[in-house]
Length: 416
Ligand code: LLP
Image (cartoon, rainbow, N blue to C red):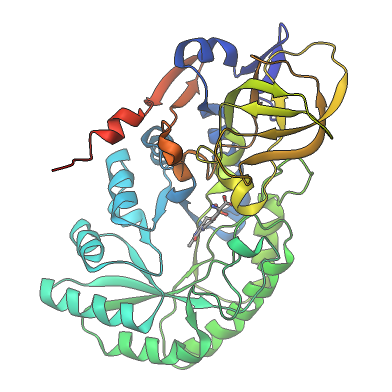
């Protein structure tokens, strides 16, 4: 639990607001975020990366709620986006186009056109085909685009295989063998301006070693490429900084920034960018849910929540573990239980046979570290509602996305 999540009068509070009191109004399940925690994380990140004089581009995919993006904009952060939709949100929140980087392996023409129109800072190119398409679009539109080449550095982030992105054979980045072709095409183009190189080796990385490895490789490549006449001025090191999901494994901003600085020593005139997502918002959010049933079976009872894998996909997709705490603290015995959701799939499980304080039917609980890749990955599977999001700010809370009722979704359908 972080310092803004605490029990006062036996009730779990986020900042000074009791989560039970929000639940009475909003009804479970819902996501709740703390503005204070997001701001703490932003300043910790900014301070740590001063040693690299890095610019911060928040990875919008982690949590794209407008209220969250406003906090990022207010703190002066740029954005890393992967779709026209994310770009639109970032712009709406007040993040200037000149601070937006467009990443992603499958940018569509219409999306690139929208980004050219908006005048974003940089496209991170991930294939020769994409590079050629952007070149043609720029010619047609008589526009110039700033580009960096995202390379596949073949470095293992040592994280879950579904969120590792920098190893050979992964779909991300341009393989080293194609780098000189990409740089050659950019150099010949009147419409593309080379800014530099980009990498992103994965997410929820908890050791500094992969960052050291990738930065050491980049240092050599940059020196080499500059020697060949390529003006590499920018280096985008991506995100991926892991947070503590309850097992004590976490990557500190200071450590990773220091390691990057050491490994890049000697490379002059390089503007560093980073794209943190999870590390800015993950700790700031909880998912509040009700235990609707206790199912007393062998070998252990099930706690059946009103939240399911459609609301929080991470456990089903990556076997992720989100700590669970009751909203009311009191003397309780411990028991071994499995915690599941109501969805008709066996993967709809939050915890298998864990020891928890005994929780009764009708009680509310919170799943922690749910601020990143929670609400953004939710769906209406099983024709369920898409649950609301709440932001706690200075003793008040606000509904920052209302519940999308299954009937709202039904209205989008028609039968002739
Ligand atoms: N930059 C790029 C190009 C990315 O692809 C990502 C994340 C980030 C930055 C931000 O990474 P972060 O700092 O948040 O680790 N849904 C998964 C995580 C997918 C991450 C995808 N890319 C999960 O819930 O663990």
